Each structure stands twice: as structure tokens, then as C-alpha cells.
Length: 295
Image (cartoon, rainbow, N blue to C red):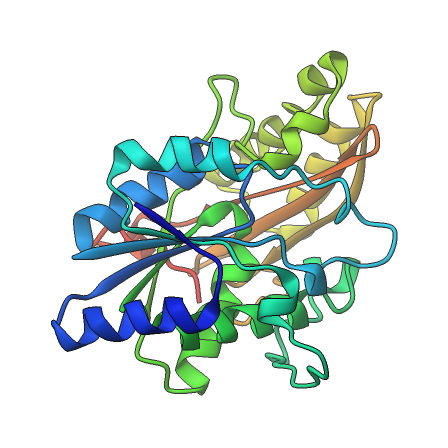
């Protein structure tokens, strides 16, 4: 496994794989790798001839006052985790390598980027869409692997690929969870012990929505009220937003009859902001392939 820091070198390697007709599986990450990331890498290894993982804490998707400076960075540890999975290359560029002096070109997926996380974090998805466009152009992957925990990001990535006719397939895999249901996230390490216990409220809240849906509830407002009550029971938690939308355009829904729905939430536990989601599906709308219906 080689660690590459220069875009020109990474592009040269990608072109070599293309010339050999070896499809590349790509996993974009910001490092601080955990089992959620590793599950994506294992699927990339299974589906692809070559596997590339990027480790890049993207400054353009952080707003002032967010945790860009404190975001965990440990490239040596990440490399140790990736070595046993037979990753071919790690692409770990500096910010100046991705955004050289004078950089002024931005990519925005309109109609999706200002909803949910985009409404709570203005400009976030402009940074995400721009860096994905750059990474796709450097690496030329056939498959790009993402997790359902970042559901909106996967929807935007799929729309980006469709609109720009990029020859990539976005493969979305289920959220990986701890034994108590908490979605695995790099930001979980910010939680103090009592906050870590309290953070399970996100999964309990989503489970409550699933239970009500299974019992026949199809009114989105009533589901949201039930979820708000669940979060209110946890003193250390504060909801940033709860939303029930369709899974393609992310438009808010009122009636969940005869369709699938994406239930998303962002919750502050102490000062740490965590996100999670679940897809509510009537049996006849479930994917027969097992792939997640996002985007």
C-alpha cells in the first residue's frame, strides 16, 4: 500500500489502472477511520480490481466555529487499519494540493444542498460537491462507496454524477452501529462518558418512528411529535432538526401512504452534534436488490 500526497501522482496511477481496464473502487473519507469506513472499504475490495481511499479533512465543508481545527487526524493509525484490507493506495493530499492558490471554482447541486443539513450548515454541501468533483476527476473511480448515515450526502453525490454525466456509480451501504444502536461516527469520540450514554437517544428516537410506522401511522406530523417527545426525555440532548422527506428530492412529506420516506435528525448531545436517519418503507416499496433507495 502506498500513500500518495500529490494529485498529479494519484491521477497517473488512476490512468494506469484505466489502461489496464481495472475498475477502481473509491472510498472518500476524512480519516479518523472506524468500522463504518472499513465496511465500505471491504465492499470496495470485493467489487473492484483496485481500491483507493482518500483521507482529506475538507476545509470548505466546515463553517467558521465548527470543528475543522480539532477534527481528529492520525494518518499512521488510519494506514494501519487499512493495510489488512488490502487497500492499494491512500490519497492524503494537503488542502493546498486540492485548492491551490487562486482556486475559485465551485460546484453546487441546487435544490438539494439547502435542505436538512444544508439548511443547518449553509455552504456545507457546496464544499462537499466541490471536493467530490475534484476527487472524482483525479481518481476516475468506477464505484464510489458511501454510508447511509450521511444520507443527504449520498443523494447529492448521485445527483452530481447524473447531472455532470460522470461515469461513476455511487454505492450506498447501511449504517454501521454500536451494540447499543448508536451510529458509528468519528465525532463520537468527542462525547464524555455520560454524553456517550445519552447519545443513544438518536437511535431510540428513530426506532420509535419505525415502531409507529409499523403500527400503521402514516402522518408525518404525528411521527415528528412522537420523536420530539423521545428526545425531550434525555436531559443532555437537544434536537437541531427532525425531518421526514422523500428519499430523492428531500422534499418534506405530510402523508407517508404509498411511498417510502427518509427520516433524518440532527441532535446536540452536550456540545457535540450527531446525525442519523432511517428509511421507512412499506413492504411493497422495499428494494428487491437490497440496495438502499437513496437518490
